[in-house]
Image 1 (tube, rainbow, N blue to C red):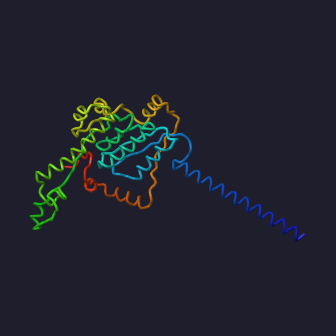
Image 2: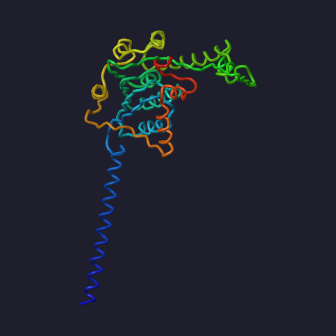
Image 3: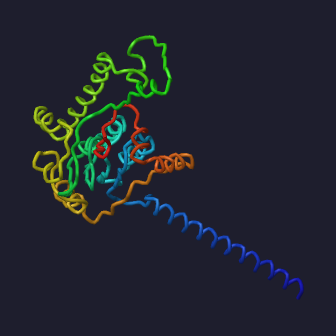
Length: 301
């Protein structure tokens, strides 16, 4: 009796161990599947959505996410939602090129929210079709290079700044020296070259004549209604109208789910991102945009 009892106990333990292990594996699998689905990794066809907000910088993580979307056969279209005053020229240019690569393989739709100006409009022209609300502020096509000159202030404080340079235009314009005609001319060449690049983007993206684009690209902003009248956008609307257009023109089912592109960042990336948010005041944000920028900020004098 004792021997049979011990054998039965061992069999029971083995069964319990088996089922406990199976239960743990099932729970882990369910949790993993849930996390995978929540992160946008669920299988099946869908429409990807990229949200571009705030000041635009050259974000390598975001560019990598866009490239991943381009290669994903399950992605049938890309909606780019824009709510940005613009940013650096390089940031806008990099996004424009990345979206153009996607556009060669699948439809790209731009949907403007409250604000899509300067570099924000630059990336919109990479889309097959641009939607905006009637009250959307857009346009501000142009480039600027800002500097400050504090020589008179330093003089009053009794501070004399001196720089030994290899050539007169090295490190110019500088806040510690007067802007000479030569410096102004050299800097204007930079601005004009990037402005010509911006014009060319709009000409190609909107299929407009260069003369018309230059007439519209004097730096002014437009409402969505004005932009539609001038050919800078295609239609008034938002996500619903974008989906209707995709269904009608590209035969993409309205029933397909829309999934946000989630940009995976390391802890260090999130710390940098949080730091940039803290810095975004009207003054510090301006100072963090070094070099050539395409940004609309009318509240700065």
